[in-house]
Structures are given as C-alpha cells and as structure tokens.
Image (cartoon, rainbow, N blue to C red; front, side, top):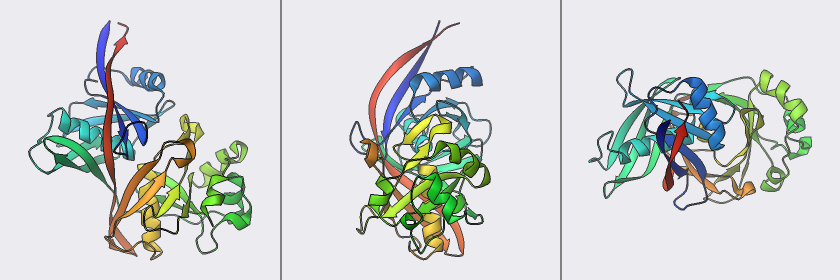
Length: 297
C-alpha cells in the first residue's frame, strides 16, 4: 500500500473555513490519470492538484482535477499550489515576491508568491490576454439562470470571455438578483455548448468588494464554487474593455457568500481597454490541515 502525503489549503482568504478549499498532493509521481481522478473524487473539493517533476523550464508539472474531470487551467489551484511549492522549499523562498512557473495543460503559467518571514501568504496568477466571443442572447442567459430578462444589467450583454478557460460573463442588475440565481440544468447543457459556463455577477455599489459573483458548475461536479479565479480573470477583462475597471487598478471580487464560504479575489489588468495584455487574479492562502492518503497497490 502506497502512502501519499497531502495538504489542504483555503484560498482567497486569510482565515480557516472560508475561501475555496484545495487539496495538494506534492509527491504525485507515478500516479495515473485514473488514480488522480479517483483521489480528486474522494477529496470531493472543487479542485485537487498533483505535483510532478517539471518536463520543461518550469518549476513543476501540475495536473488539476475536479471531482468529475481534469482541467487544463484553474485559478485557485494555481495560487494554492504555487504557495505550497514555496512552503515546501521546492523553489526559492528568499525573495519577498517569488516567481513560480507551473507547467499546466494550457502551457507555462506564472504565479507570483508573496513571502513573509519565510512563508507564503498570498499569490497572484497571470492569465493570458483575453479572447472575446460574440454575445449570448439576453433571453437565453436570463432563462439559464432562472431569472427574468429585467434581472440582466441593461448596459452589459452576456459575453463569453477566455483568459485560459472560457466563461460567459453575465452582469446582473443587483446583488438581490444574483442571490435569486437558480441554474436550469435542462437549459445549461445547450447554453454551455453554444457559449460557455455561466458566471453571473453584480456590482455591490461599494469600493470593496467591488463586485459579487457566483460560480455554478454542476457538470464538473461542483454545485457551487466558493471562488473561481479562472472566471474572475475574464470578468476583469470584460469590465476593463467596457471602461469600468481602470487599467492597472486593483479591485476585489466577492464570491462564495451565498454558500457560507466568502472568498475575496483581487483582479487587475494591464495594457489598454482594446488591447489587454495581462490579466491578474490574486488572493491570500491559509493552510488548514495535512494528512496521508492510502493508495492500494
């Protein structure tokens, strides 16, 4: 019987039992994809990551699994795993900001880890320049969320945006409308096939948090995600293109409040509104437990 150590973190929070949980297996060499998927299903968190030796110039090869499938990229797993690589001394820990390069299925992904007193406390993942697709029909977007057409923000169309993964950003008229979202599973399959997974959001009317969002991904085995860094990036890019998010200014997005796991994601973009070159999503990381998993021979 093989023993595998693992560590569990809460990402996008500075306190335990909030944010988005992540399991990290730092000694995953030799595991098959089938075994990784079975372990991720057993952990039953939004994502579980497996650290492998680098295959190129990066610091580690990393594979990311939800309880139902493997992802080519994800936000909170990139942030949490990079922090663990620093904490485990698998990369340089002497810099106040330590750059970690993860080899993911989308290619090399850079993560900047903030180190205080020799330990990682937060990180920022760099996402690629956004790709904007044709807007989704407003009626279809409202219906898939179980809302009325009047619940959609009148100034912003639902638009699929890709900065590593693709999401349909759907701005709503209020946080009250956001709280009433109820994903129609019969409509969701076709909507996602035509456009992308939904990421409804609403302005808070405050400076922090600036917006609130919800991540509903039942087909990935995640009924509701406490935080979705790979969707917060497209949200930031969309709002920057619309002139709502100033270039190089940081804002905070709240997610997970509806399920008792409040998460705070910092977002920023660089470039120009019509030529965004860099999308950044960051947050704090809190370690909550470590253990061992027994894998049958």
